[in-house]
Amino acid sequence: MTTPAPSLQRCSIARTLDVLGQKWSLLIVREAMWGRTRFAEFRTRLGIAPDILADRLARLIEAGVLERRPYRDEGERERDEYVLTDAGRALTPVLAAMVGWGDEFRPTGFGPASVYTSRTTGEPVRLAFVDASGVEHSPADVVPVRGPGALT
Image 1 (cartoon, rainbow, N blue to C red):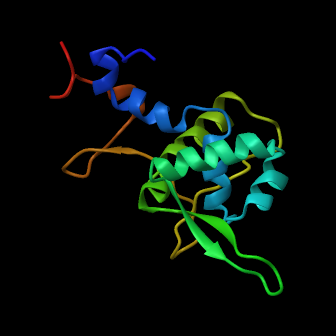
Image 2: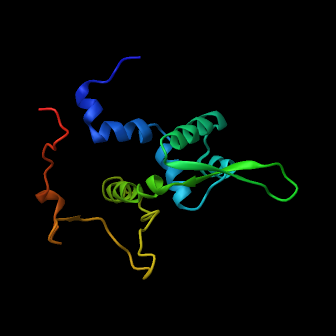
């Protein structure tokens, strides 16, 4: 196994992709956000092979996105369920950004499959770039600049 280039070791996107970049990982997180917690629920909803699902769940647990909790249905043996951690719930804007991009640039003609809303009001919400003084900026007006951790 080779060590990644120093620029990749410092790159936030590369480190995130190490956790979430495999096929199925973000879909498992999406299902967990919809309240699914059990292996069989993930398999049924996603149509994923059990060995791949087990691998992705283990990786998400190792990365701190999900945690394993035991449960027992009446008359059944103890099993594990998979629950989002704070790190997993913090992926909400990532998924919302992907939904927004997919709805705009890869539409199905059926409308959005997910609509993000305020928990308290039920009103739809959207992602935005907002500066420290509360001013919202168009994505066209936002550019990335190198941060203190970047290699020059």
